[in-house]
Image 1: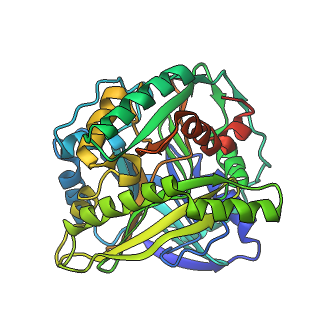
Image 2 (image 1 turned 90 degrees about the vertical axis):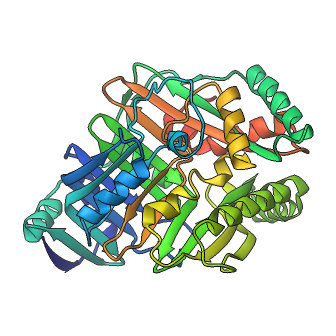
Length: 427
């Protein structure tokens, strides 16, 4: 495989063409870092991978160990892929009773035949035929998005059922079984017609975020506008950036400032964030050199197009010779999507939620040729099975001792606002 650099004048248009070109393959991936905030840890503005040299699928007794072997067999490669939330059942003594209605694999990674690394106006193409790929992208006729969605969105959990489950989980908190739990609900549609690439492009405009992703493997399409980093590795530095604490955007600058100030002083939102920071710190100690876990930023306020969020940054120095998938396994799934204590919260999630999470609350990302990696948290995301014509998305929020059911339900709908706008539906 050879590598060639190209300087592109209109990088936005080139990226859209490259995505459209890649989507014609049976397997493709586009990871995009966008939005209002610079990410000090990002390796690219966009990474587009197409077609398969080698791939890794679920079905292993220990998926993390098997994935590590796959990475070792294909050194110095970009390897994009995803991990489903239900891999927790391999890590802990947990069980998910709900069927996998979306049929998304629990894990999928691939070594691409063609890869485009985009940073600024520089595009680096890795392929056996980089000039052929470049010409193929340049000569692609980019058709402006003509978004199509037909189907009726339904709630897997009614509002009344949500409130009932919320109260039961609150009792578990008051009894001391847990301190915090993330309650999620699924919305779905069947007999759906969807144009996935157009959906991704439009969702990216409605809600530009630093961990956006489009992933296609066969009939499975993942359209993600995630704002959250699960775990990254830069040399030996491990970085996790959990999000806990949400407020709507204001209609005016003055209202926006007032909402930010309210978020920064909201006791319930602060307690949510601090509990998850403690959980992440504890998870990272399993992989870290002694005394190296640090809270680099506590509850920074970050504003996105739809919402304001409280984001904390926790870092650690990974142990020498720590295998990449071990570091991921030690913190998986993201604590912001479980609760604390983590295993107890996940057990209650399995008991009380109305559907399998599948890839939701899992992770999409990559392993880089230099040994680094970066993975998001799959939230604000659509899953589409083109064969079954089934569309699914989840939303959720944290429950703590002082939480109010109706407020949390409304927060769930706020987080789904961009998807509602995209689909032209109300939930």
